[in-house]
Image 1 (cartoon, rainbow, N blue to C red):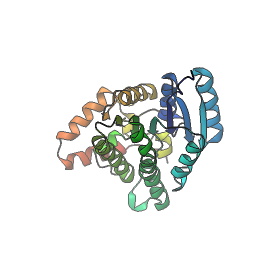
Image 2 (cartoon, rainbow, N blue to C red):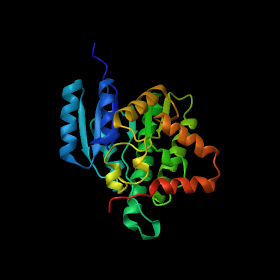
Image 3 (cartoon, rainbow, N blue to C red):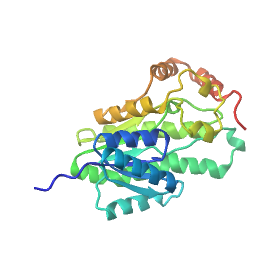
Image 4 (spheres, rainbow, N blue to C red):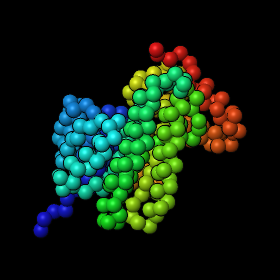
Length: 266
């Protein structure tokens, strides 16, 4: 009797940071992997490491999700391989710091494409198969930023508010179908994000709530496997979100701007 194929996890932004750790946890949990990122050499290295360490099948797809055609191209590859996506982890995303009125418009639109449009597109392409099989798990990378407006990172905060709202809404729509949708909402985390966004020396990343990648990913993975709607890793982040919920909006804006200010890298 032929053995059942292992479940398959598709993970974007899988070459480093939270995405890489989530890929490792999926592999450890017995999932084959389809790893998506822009850097071919890093993806190849990650693929070899995870397949060797956990004896799972790994495939890589080099793609830039800032390209509007990338999600469809990714799913064409997955279909050609004859794989079902049992777990979708929309991890890819980035941010930039600065006044919106002075920011590079192309970069801001690329942020919306990666953080919002590609995530939505991939979810919509994967969902029919999950519905047909009546099982599946989706994990979307939101942020504690999704709970507040973000002066000096206006577009980034807005994209994460979308991810949080979108995830909760479709999770409700899918209740009873065997499919769960989880929004992972980390606070500041020690990844390459801060350097890429230019906020390494902001007040936010000087905060004692800054977390390592491993507990953030572990919280997200466990929450996803348990079918939780929203996961906020770390006590400090949970307390922060509760304080924002009961604070007047003018104060939330003041607090959010203070977090973004400080001695940043130029």
